[in-house]
Amino acid sequence: MDCLKAVTRLTGYLCHHFLLFAIWIYSSQELLHAMAEPIQVSSKSELASPPSTGLFIPIEISPAVIPHYPDPVEPFSPMYPSFPTTYEPVLTGKCPVNFSSISIIMDKTALDCSAPLALVVGNVICCPQFHSLLHIFQGQYSTISNKLVLQNSVANDCFADITSILASRGGNSTVPSICSVNSLNLTGGSCPVKDVSTFEKTVNTTKLLEACSTVDPLKECCRPICQPAITEAAVKISIEQLDVDESQNMLGKSNSSGLDAINDCKGVVYSWLSRKLSYNAANTAFRILSACKVNKVCPLDLKQPKEVTEACRNVGAPSPSCCSSLNTYIAGIQGQMLITNRQAIVCATMFGSMLQKGGVMTDIYELCDVDLKDFSLQAYGQQAFGFNLTAGCLLRSLPADVVFDNLTGFSFTCDLSDNIAAPWPFSSSMTSLSLCAPEMSLPALPTSETLGNHGFLSGSGLEFLIPIFSFLVFSTILY
Image (cartoon, rainbow, N blue to C red; front, side):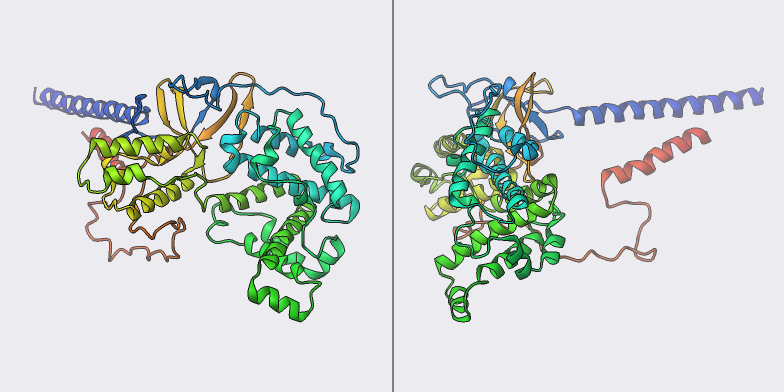
């Protein structure tokens, strides 16, 4: 009888602990499922507040699901669905380069500079890719001419053919105007060295190729390797045909002609790199270098915020008039273009400095719930996860491209991981913000003598869940 009671009690313990374990597993799954569900963002005219919970991952914003702006007076969104019209281009017949050899890069450029999107993605996607195409074209030309740049007459014909081909493949016909580029960009300008042999005699090409053959997208912008190598090579060839006095005058005074020559010679360096690297490797490297440049500045046209400073100068708490004026100003810049997450930080800092110079000392970004995405183009519509989204689209700081398919048309990836409040500058003189972390050394790993209480973990919650899970399983088996 005692034996039967013992068996019954043991069975009760096992069932009890197994039931607890099952409940814990079910609760954990529900928690993880809830964390993974996207947050619904309402379509309001006011700026959205950052969500308190939820996980965001980059999603693709497709113009096929983005209707026109809610205000019927305003023009349709430039992201409205559109499909490219292709046709056979009419060429001059005077350009000696075989365009079929760089057809892949031409297709990529036409897509990144597609007619309906070129204006809004020009600064971040289209123009960097267009500049890369021109560098690669120069490299291709050098393989048949031993010249790293084109003569003016040939440059005019080739540049006309390039723009015609891009337009025939769905690209915007005004790309040269959007990107402020013309045929002179193919000529080398005032750079004195324009042929391959002189270039390779003057420049340490081994060092240059080693620095730029593979560009690290995570390190190059803050710990540059390729950029200084290009600048060094450009400086060397820019003073190659000058005597000592002229060279010292150019470098000592840093006059405009000297700087122009160095900038023109950088184009020659890019041409030589395009000659040595594969098309894909060269395009990847040039796009990364462009990203480092564009992410340092705010491309938005920020007008003087007189109305905002008048409404917000003396506020110390949330003010409807202040926030309304701020929202109106930001709504006016939202339609300019798509920007990256890093550019949004720079723009928010610049605008905050403008407000501080006007007498606004309170962090009105926080008072009015201004988010980084509020500085970029707004997207409206039904998204891939099945919820309505009205939010700014911030592109990733790394090079991005426009995507096209026959179902959704043109699309691009928004980086929804940066759903954070806009930073308020420390002072009015702070017009830029360094986004590179300072050099630091990691602390030594803890030894057994410095671990302290082994029963507690000061790290993440995930680390703390592991021993709990192990304990529950072990106790269930034991009892």
